[in-house]
Length: 353
Image (cartoon, rainbow, N blue to C red; front, side):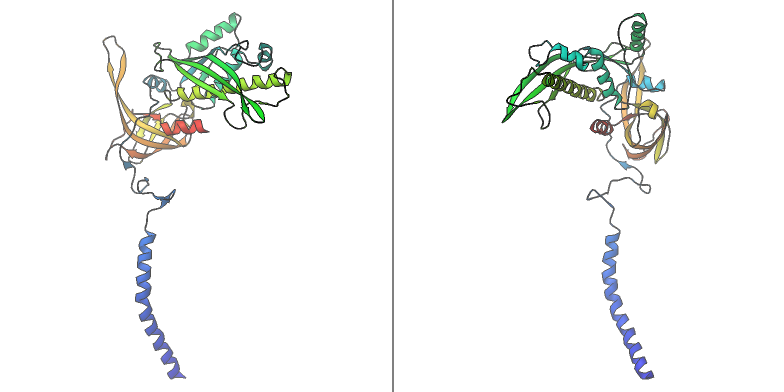
């Protein structure tokens, strides 16, 4: 029995010596696989910054929505104030519209009501302070109108320049397509400069997509009360869509701006938070503004440098903490007094929501 156990023990030791090199040859390649970089969206995250490597180094593109007037706004610790004014929403007596003026009055299609819709579209971005004059008429309301406009940085006025409804065939039915063209002006109230390069017109269309536009059965009259209301609602939806497009054009040129108060190799603190129009998860561009005083005493920005990109996770009321994600060059120094502006990607993300 003892001899039998000794033989078994010797066989086990020999088997271990034979198997260990084979297992080692198998495990070593696998351990190399375990050290592969993490995967993001199916691709190797070779360039994703982390706490160990710090921000990546590469080109930094300045946000398209920067305007030098924004620097004055952050110096005053507030967000951009926009005054809206709807001058004309179109005439329901227009022969190209299929509903009468009485229906427009019933639906509340007035300048003041549509101006409120435009304000709501701007407020939905959570980037701006929006002012308007409210109902007109009377000394008190007139005073409030002047006060609202004078408190604004930017004045935006809209006017419907064309509106039409047409019937298109989608057998066995017909459908109404409504198109409203809105002209938009955006003026820097401080110097009268037109911030758009010429006149900007946006087209709001309701009825091109499936599920949009009033359907007309073969035996239904356009003159019925219910049908007239539906046609008026189509016009309202097309105008609202035009307002949404107008807001997209506005925030291409006007963005929240902050000011750096502290920075190290990993992140920065900035003066700029919810009160200035920033939101949690925003991407920002850090830049340096070079100013020059003109002969008339005015100080203007004559050059800017995009230094870095960062993401702000800790957005407070007026102060935010942001992680650096990309630097223009190795060893780039972000300084107290540099500025930040909302990136193009974050501005577009808000519009998609």
